[in-house]
Amino acid sequence: MSDDHAAHAISAYGSRINHTPNIDRLATEGMRLDNCHCTNSICTPSRATILTGQYGHRNGVYTLADKLDGAMEPQLQKILKHADYETAMIGKWHLGHGDNHDPAGFDYWNVLPGQGLYYDPEMIELGSKKICFGYVTDIITEQCIKWLRQRDRDKPFMLMCHHKAPHRPWEPSKQYANLFEDTKIPEPETLYDDYSNRSNAAAAAAMRVNRDLAPTDVKQDPPEECTGDDLTAWMYQRYIKDYLRCVQSVDDSVGTLLDFLESESILDETIIIYTSDQGFFLGDHGWYDKRFIYEESIRMPFLIRYPDEIPPGTTSDRIVINNDFAPTLLDYAGLEVPEAMQGVSARAVMRGESPSDWRESFYYRYWMHAAHHNVYAHYGIRTHKHKLIYFYSEGLGLDGTGDEPKMPEWELFDLELDPLELRNVYTKPEYQDTVRDLTARLEQLQSSYGDESLH
Ligand code: CA
Image (cartoon, rainbow, N blue to C red):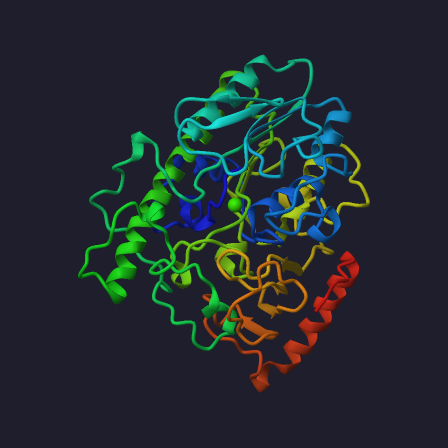
């Protein structure tokens, strides 16, 4: 797993801006999920959901400020460990530290504190801190290989290799520092978005490439004469190149790990997944970052290789959510999925089947009201054809001071006619049946998941 790696920066997903041969190998030799989504597009909550199979209102991890309680059940790795799997977590943890929040249920862990550093990062190995010299993506890869070499070969294992890259502030390795130097990276269609025909929330967000990136992100002052659209274009090139350079090292890591498993003759008997904790705006809508329920932010890349069961070169457009990851892995391990997990096994989907009772929509909720980047708290439902969103501000003022746009407000997008989500059709007469239907389905989902603190 990587951090903030959007599917549209992977060539197997049709990237127009980079090439990722090693990650692509998982698609060629396995399955690519085209409708895999996180249910709260932010690092810590997505990681908690992946381990627990639960929404934030169940596992207690709503925002970046929350920590996962190590004692809570269920957690994927604890169940596997109990079933005699050897378990390891290496790299970015980001679910808290200290007695109750260090990685629990892992035989071995070696993690970055908080966000961690790109160069010469401190790591915490089973509670002891030490500095590791070098580039973080290479270090995490090396630590994973080291652990795989010394693992207990009499046991099955689960290794979570969790990269920090390509998270902000996008510091590439020396190897790729000049990659794309003489290239103009294609701009996304919505880079110059003016946020018209939409909610106030989109315009209020402080994650604009041309305005909100810090000097540490672009690492150079823009030329003085550079203003307006020229400035947007300049900032985009500066930031996206470093982002993609960081991705290149992650792609190398995937190649190194695949080669190692092959050299150990366990490649085909190991289920290998590549994913990221959420998506990312790659200049889409003029933004970087994530948080919103909009497409580029909620889509997780998900590639899985397991030739015994998954036909090579296949894809699925079934809606899979990060709540499903733990149930799916437990199913592969032949273990029971706890009732308390709020996801289901997608093993049949991975086999290329379309189970008749598979979900046709999913529930999303972003809780971190107006904190960082001024994105308003919201919840919503996405189906294959539509997305209904409710933005609100009452009662969750984590940092809700300052000028607030008028809330609450609704958005409805017709994803078939408007895949870039540029026209809110919530009040259009021809969509009123859809609004009624989706509102009812949204309420049903909230009720079925036990999310009761509504607005
Ligand atoms: Ca992230």
